[in-house]
Image (cartoon, rainbow, N blue to C red; front, side, top):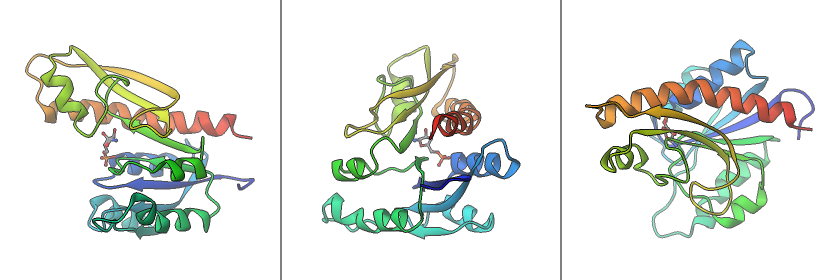
Length: 194
Ligand code: GRF
């Protein structure tokens, strides 16, 4: 682990708006860290192109169908280990990490989830909250353990579900909350980091 600015590996699968918020916070000095690498299982992730445009190193580690997770994760683990990474930041990374990956980097993997865990885990959390008729959902940031969307919670913020909300309108408000909360909580983790 490095002594100066904390080095982040940001793992994405999609648009990477949280990744962008984290990078912008790091660039403006609000977050005392640097995005050492952006890794995606999806070579076509919009966020990868965005990271390249912003001048960051990106690596695509496509997962081969039929291979065990541990095999698919080898390239990701190698990329992380080669770069002296302090924190692995999951930002819309749509793969469940294997227990051996979690063990390798225990306590150094952070995730953001668009619901108030333990409510609505899984990939459809925003839709599930609406369909369940919930009046409030939110955002959770947590340390990753072996279970899906599970592990010690660092922060949660409520986001009300308004009458007439669609998945899109609610997602927009959840994302706004995420973009403010994630960089701030990463800074808190870094402050406590020794
Ligand atoms: C976010 O809603 C995050 O909570 C979830 O995946 C989404 C990623 O969005 N894990 P983006 O790629 O950061 O725009």
